[in-house]
Image: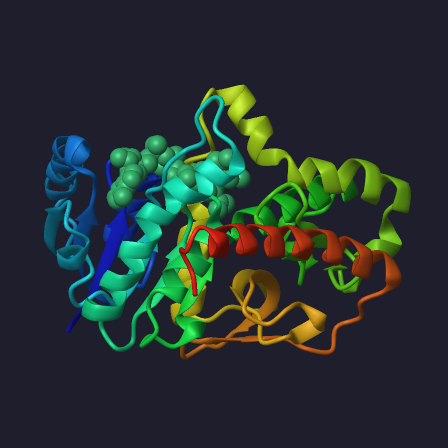
Length: 325
Ligand code: NAD
Ligand code: LMR
């Protein structure tokens, strides 16, 4: 048996950084053969062919086949894992509503194609920005697929938050546990040091709260922009790495708490139906659950409310555009 992995935006920077690791077995383990289905827009099909040539030239034992197409119905046929990376980037002068509309034109038909053609067991990760709302659009257009199969990526934000905290406290990243980011993949996201632990002790007790609020939170939230400023392009290898962490742990399990943006069922007072980042536990046989009962103090509550309000505004905007019901 093998798994069919559909990757959109295959000719893009994240696609290039992810595909070789996926084909080498880092996504689903060394016992799973892989069929790749690569979705690109017409003008980028030739570049995707080039990537496919390099994948063939790598002679990966787990890689059974590579199909390249610009037809979403073909790309999602039999899909077990969908990594929705391709998206319309913000261009100069583009308003947020324009960006949401342009991405709606991508994620609505992809949701419909997933609904009609994917495997019953399909799992979807949305990476393309605005990731939470793009996942909401895809999910809303796939009514026959269980809601919990649609997720978007905040694992990169978690990885950034872990790394920055470890540096601050001069500890190893392995000493940091349960560091979860809440809300939207945007500068409003809330990295939660109250429930995180460093060497088994509450992280918030080991840092100055002024540093936490006024240095750490903005640095985590604006790291994507800082990378764009430095590289002249958005993060690619670290985003691919986080996407692989997300899917790997969803399929195979992981220790501790991690961040995944999933459909809210109303937990922690976050409005039902929004795709928000939550603390999740990833089970060893596959699957996840949102962990309930964590401490949310007034400070955390106010920060979570800000990022959730932003998600509501994005939801309302795409509703107005007729992209969701
Ligand atoms: P890129 O511009 O290098 O590649 C995007 C690719 O998507 C292009 O090859 C383009 O042709 C393709 N594409 C566009 N529309 C498509 C469609 N309808 N179907 C299939 N493919 C399509 O961009 P990148 O660096 O690979 O980034 C991809 C996305 O990921 C961007 O939206 C970026 O903002 C986002 N991103 C998200 C995170 C996160 O943490 N969630 C992190 C980094 C980047
Ligand atoms: C990131 O967090 O690196 C990206 O989401 C930034 C971007 O706008 O592509």
